[in-house]
Length: 223
Image 1 (cartoon, helix red, strand yellow):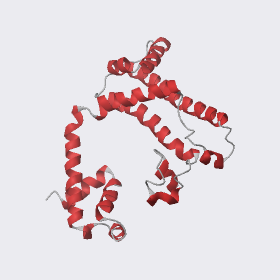
Image 2 (tube, rainbow, N blue to C red):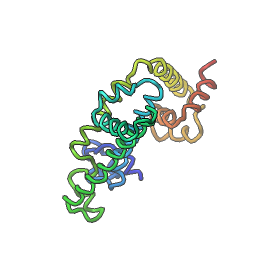
Image 3 (cartoon, rainbow, N blue to C red):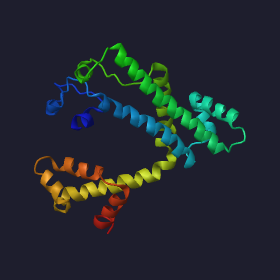
Image 4 (cartoon, one colour):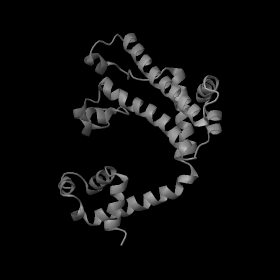
């Protein structure tokens, strides 16, 4: 599991990262670990299109114009369900998009396993490249979705006020615990004896839910 966490989204050179030597950096991770990053992206890309539309940060016309693969599925939904509400047609197109991404990921990975004649975990680890991935065409479509979301949703100017507030809260809490480590939970205080305090504080903040971090800010900083 720990190896999968380290390797799920990238490969590390053994010589450049000697501190990670226990995770077999010269070998590829198991298929489950290779799959995590790709599966996450399928889920995020499709869910964020829906969230962006629901939040009115994206428009249906904008999505259709920028993403031909989605537009193709929307046209199919219009033809199949001409009297359905617009949002239901959107949902149907999104379902087809999800199926295209997930289905291609499964089929292309199976094809790579057959091409490389992979029969067991040792051969997965010994392969010079990762085996899990998309076909070239669908990978290009995936990249376009990701680029579209980054430019039009994640970096949307409408989100700037919230980002500024989040930066302020995280920054002030980080500064507080750096000056007052005795207010960290006991487990993190103990970790500070093994690792650097900035790293420990970052790890603590990174594991917080939105509600908890607001509670901590009200408790320690909003006075």
